[in-house]
Image (cartoon, rainbow, N blue to C red; front, side, top):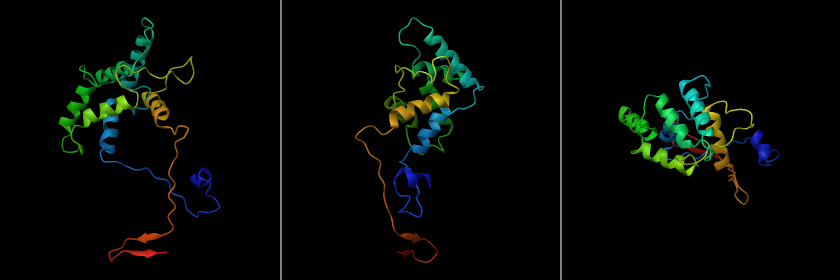
Length: 178
């Protein structure tokens, strides 16, 4: 019951469940991130090796700000055989998997979401956790960006909803136990 401690409910609640709201299109969005290689944890994969090379090359450039998300996403797309970039890779994937795509225009929504997250083509990559090391994988880099963008900020709050009833769903009409 780790969340009971975090929310200060340890002495009040017998069971604490923590969930996440899921919005329409969320699964398709995560699928897009996976197609792009942003969820790849294997440091030896072609995508991670291409990403590391792109980051190193851009960072060794003229000092114009170092590597960007655009550099990374282009390298990941190229490692997946798509030299036209991430938009083309996602568009091709939407065509290939149109029966499983639950939201129209998933590729444009994914790219818009990445821009909102600070992963747009001109956005700088965050520095690695230690100045003398590189990111272990693309997913570690992406997770750091998500944590920076999605962490609660001062003045923001989380919602705790206390429910004291249990609804049982059976073949007969539902029953509520108070």
